[in-house]
Length: 393
Image (cartoon, rainbow, N blue to C red; front, side, top):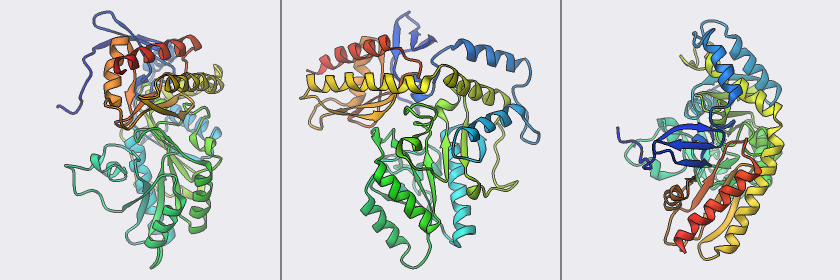
């Protein structure tokens, strides 16, 4: 089906931060499967670990205990604010689970008949119907109406607007079950959350017994320079969702919750493939390799190097570029509003310079390379990006 507008490149193999096409051309990959291949391509340790797993079990039902799943859940709980985990297969599935959890919380804890979930304008929470209904970008809704009911929106990082929306909705009594929000909006334009806004948001949610749920599908698992995006903001959510970098290129998602938010009972939610031995072995290997290689501090260092280089490009292309924003190895280069070219144009032109980048909306070029990227590769990324921008002088 024609669901993807693909670039005219056929990729056949990869190693580290590099991929090769069917003509033998080598590209520096600053997309990483859209923030997914945490350890890069064809990682030796991951290959060995998954090869061993395939000799044991690749899949069994959640009707039985799964040691790999339990080991991964233990690691996640020990290294985050959460107390328990539900596993699924993608970020959209993780957010669907979070939406169901929020509605149950609204019914059980706040006595709401038709619970509302507040999400931010310019947010992105997935492509399934409830997840896209929660997404604060109307262009994703077109052609798929009616949207799932029960979602209202507010401007990201705008405390006054949030409070006004909440007060309006709760004027006649409890109506809001949860706030679902990204610590940094990825697809919406690489918009970092403001710590002061999130601190007040945490206080308001606690005061009203509203669940605060973070969508960490893109920023989680070390990409932001901390294990989790909430650490960047200095607040803890009641629940948060993961996917993308968790599996290092293998399909896995997760909903992590604190004990007081753990409302699911047997039969409330399930997944055939969620938490299977193969996917959990992949994720646990990624987690332990990030630890062993000290990649969190390296993400901070390489992220600072990338941001510094992008800032220099803004100074050298002032008529074309507006600024830089992001955390760690999730950086966005913002194009001037009056520029005649777009971020997709830049991503297309970058192919000629053998560089893979991706758009985050019409005016933001996003870079999300593997967490293992080296200083020399950051320099090459910047050189190739500069050569790409020269196309638009």
